[in-house]
Length: 286
Image (cartoon, rainbow, N blue to C red; front, side, top):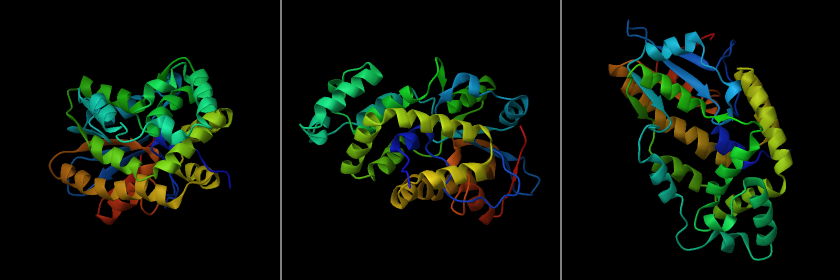
């Protein structure tokens, strides 16, 4: 089985690895408690794609406008978000060059700099995931790149809807840090040395996402493969942590939740977890 690069998990964060039980699939889902409370909505995003591949339909905008709170994975409008992320991504006791090793470093440095047009030495005190995020930007083959969450957040801002996060920066980076450092380094090496195949897989994965079908996403990711431990840390555990936050938020106000599409499907996905809490979760055409 061909293993999907961790880079794609960072770019998507993440797509589904387990089969959905829904007969009709969508990336937009209505959440209803059945108590005459206004509906909330759950939308599966793709964290990095060409700007012309993502459009906000009138229906999607109307659903955002209808709610009282907007939730992303993080509170994306926090002015200190980028600074906090960079601070927590720093290496403390070793350098990236030390971790890559003297034998491999020259080739990795040369190819990284060719791909990103940035000196690898400038990131010597950052964890491998930081460099992987820079490579992710190069894996999308277009002039204008967008983050759908940012565009959705812009709609929320347009209607002065408060923006919140399901987790903190520390929560998210702690999940990534569960991947052993040796595996992070191997992921960086594989990505740099096999970047053409990474770009091809990213393109294919984007096309699969654009079909808006969770079952199709499942089959593609199942064929691509990912370690069970990493899947548990990135998806299952975080889903379980998010559900109490979502439930508490929906007790007082109806909400729009925008998270990576992989968090929606499967027996451990948000859709099924919400159903076990008694919510009616149904797909919406948009």
